[in-house]
Amino acid sequence: MFLLKIVVAIGIAFLIIKIGVFILRSLATPPPEPPPPGELRKVKLLYRCELCGAEVRMTTAAEENPDPPRHCMDDMELLIEEE
Ligand SMILES: [Zn+2]
View 1 (cartoon, rainbow, N blue to C red):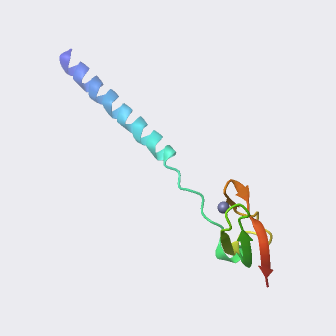
View 2: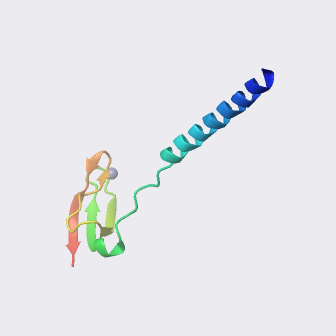
View 3: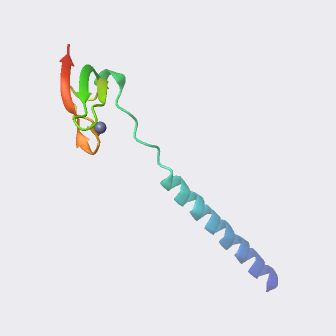
């Protein structure tokens, strides 16, 4: 039965497409959302890279004493902690 083979082939093709769409949908998970603004803390921290002298001011952090940023492959030195 030639016609039956075509129908089966079309059915299998649809099945493969459906599985492909399902896999793509499960892969496309949305990225994690940042914490709400109320949970972020306003900070005024000044960091300095001891190797190259670059200075960085941190204004917002997820916690009151955040980990220092890294520069030149090393942790930056905390200079000032303003109120
Ligand atoms: Zn540096």
